[in-house]
Length: 70
Figure 1 (spheres, rainbow, N blue to C red):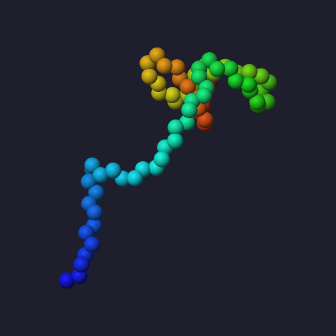
Figure 2: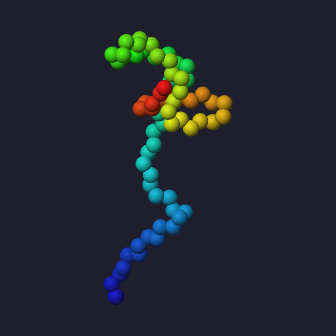
Figure 3: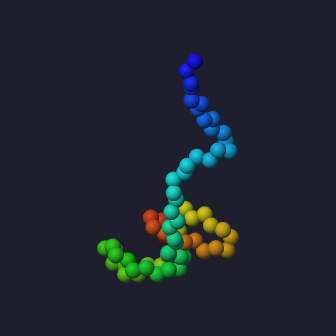
């Protein structure tokens, strides 16, 4: 008989390798004033909210790279 290599069985408890996730620090809080660089004529804008931010009670919403702010 030929030697057959046993194939590993993956169970729910086995941890598969995952991609590294890097933390992006949130640098813009609600109330931050930012210099505007588009052609709308406004020189300074104030952040009043962050779209899609699911926060914790009594914590100000914060934005980071590629977040949409109001």
